[in-house]
Length: 430
Image 1 (spheres, rainbow, N blue to C red):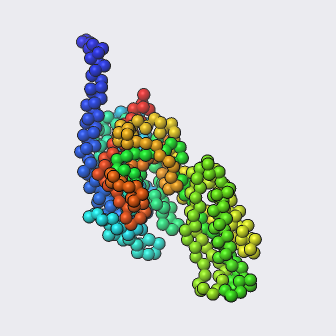
Image 2: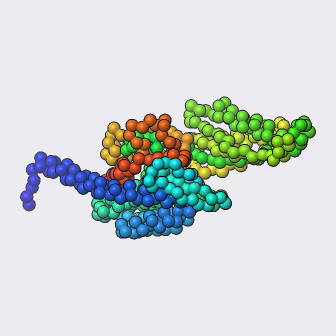
Image 3: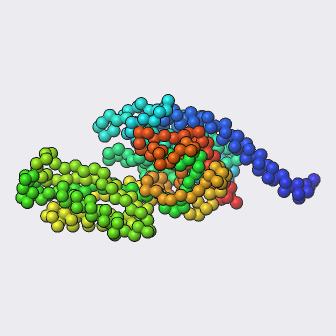
């Protein structure tokens, strides 16, 4: 048998690796135009949470064309594509959310949405005002690239297209918790899960992330204050729930500023809605206020709940009124497994360029991707979509009519997902 000189063997290895990488990059470049086209199609035809029927059908059709095993109706309208690689390895899940928001679009793009839908009994405009259309397109592009090199893929890849990340309407169930309950992280059991979110205030093509707690938990609360009705000219003959509510709101802010260890993690309590009374000269009997709580530490989250109940009930009691507090946890803290982050950061750097990958601060925004982290180590990162050279302070925020994404570098997201799958599989297969 002919033996090659050691120097030649050492030289051949990186050449082969470079050749494989070139083919890999060529496949991603080849799917870039399709990813942008998919994104714009989805953007023009958005659907609200738990109503992503056409979106789900669109996704499922493309996955079937790629030769993937496809499951539909998971978590109501969710779609799961399964790719079994040609090499042994772990099970890796990639997730994209599909739902849009009841927002009127003002962004000056030729593919802007003019669609509307029913939401809680009202006809509302619908817009992809958080970029979920880009997430779906990126994940479809990733599925396309990996299916083209299926023989080289280690292990199994689950492509999770999730409905209702923004929250199911009314009392419906939905989102990540329902998909998990229906087994999306099992059969086969997922070893690691990755997700991304486009960001309108991060320069296009750049990637940001934070190890550990990255995004806040989201709780929605309702406080019902009951007093005693009276004439507006004689407040002493009744118990004014509006004045009591004003004191409760101030008390909630004191929880933030005086009772929580803000050097450990930030806390936000926001009252966003108040309803009471029917006439200006009548002190009403009842008041209802609603709001949200954001925390970045699970223990602090429970402490805030306890303190809010105590504050509201005792302030009401001091005035002769009563207060009932109900709190509904929508998401948990989105937590990036530090070991997984350390292991996979080089993959993100390979995808975007080391100079374009950076650690960032935590955010009080929330994501139900957090629930997937209960079932497997998770890593969630942000991909920039702000046009190059724009001032981030002037870029329209998410969930607003002017929200805008530069989709010219969605291929960076595809490359990041592909690198994560291939590199994680190789590292765990060693």
